Amino acid sequence: MYPLSVESADPTPASPGLRRPLHVHIPKTAGTSLRRALGLTDPPHLTASQLRAHVGEGEWEAGFSFAIVRNPFDRLLSIYSAGRTHNRNRTRERFQRLTFGEWGRDDLEDGHPRLTARWRYHEWLDLPVDHVWRFENMDEAWTSVQREAGVSLGDLPVIHKTKHGHYRDVFDESTRRLVEAHYARDLDVYGYEF
Image (cartoon, rainbow, N blue to C red):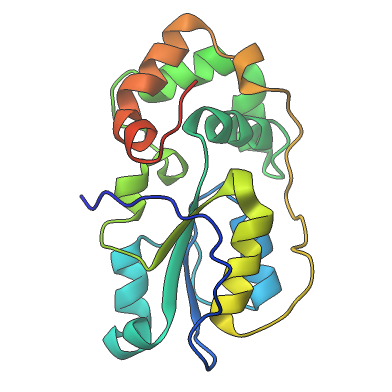
């Protein structure tokens, strides 16, 4: 709904005073690491409008809202890789039964992924947020988040990192086309490509 451009880190200082970080936690974009480092206690995986309703209008306006986006191809491979080692047996077994291509086609062919983890960015960012940064530039994003919050917390811890190769080595042509169709808006708005 709201095409938002990705920001690069701005070297100028934030406005004075502590501003509460309001993080739209999109799965597989270092959200758990950000939440833990910042001590955030709001429920994870809320859309922007859900987060605003949860904290209230005054808190939303007083804080700074942000999200991290990631190349959809890489993000889906990370979701799949995490599923294969999930701590819940049923989830892990489902992912281990399917190749990446089978899993991707199963979830994307109908055009409506069943799990919120695979929602498109405009579904997460269903109203404007103050900042959208790239996962691929996480060091700069983390510096900007700390500056906006008026804190200095050192390096961002890495939590729940998945191990996988480059997405180009895993995608077959049919799965690539499905992702390009389903995530066309994300690819265009945020400048991602295969």
